[in-house]
Length: 151
Image (tube, rainbow, N blue to C red; front, side, top):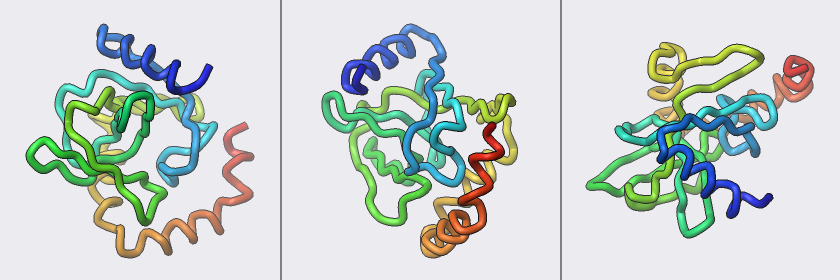
């Protein structure tokens, strides 16, 4: 099933009050969310803040999960943690869900109470000027080790 069919069904479940778990896909949220390792648990996007990770429907059937970088009069700008360039900008009404928990290596982290996650969420966007170098270092150091840890 393709995302343009599957994700609207996910959104419907979330709007009904359910939490929905999806396996992370893609590298745009590295280093904090890893493709194939992390399970992302989404819930309603009632309150939004800078640093939140949200699932947004940019246009009909086109979804992206990135971190909010800016909120200005109902206009949201977000960017993937693994992205140095490129942002998405859209109206608040396009937000479909908010990342509320992450399951990683058998442990679940509640993002509303995780002190570590809150520090990452606050600091990482501020590191944009040097993010390219940090991501290069991350890839260099962990390229061969991360997949072994996931097993």
